[in-house]
Length: 88
Image 1 (cartoon, rainbow, N blue to C red):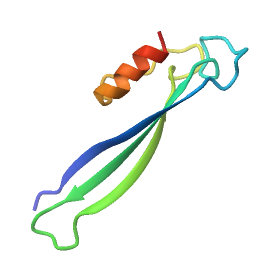
Image 2 (image 1 turned 60 degrees about the horizontal axis):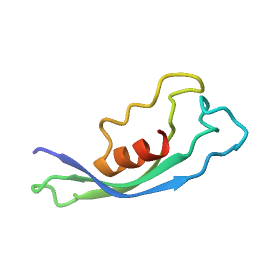
Image 3 (image 1 turned 60 degrees about the vertical axis):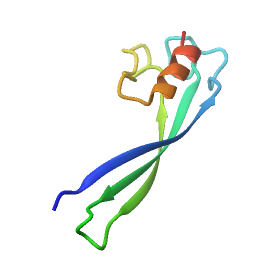
Image 4 (image 1 turned 180 degrees about the horizontal axis):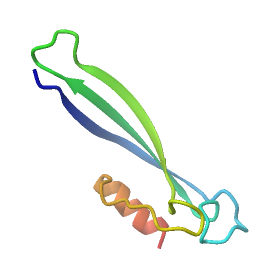
């Protein structure tokens, strides 16, 4: 019995910065990306599976205000492209 987990990227929405007067070194001073995904857990030998879960995550430019940039290297290629465009 081996359960497999798959994550399907569904969509990404971009929202403008929360505060137009906030410094660009803060998360409020940058647009955010909201990512929707479908997570499936499955085992072909288990009749109770698959289990499907929808997840929505918010990606901010920084880990914390004034801190390191958020690592987006494991994100979907489209999310990486969007981040590069809105956070440059």
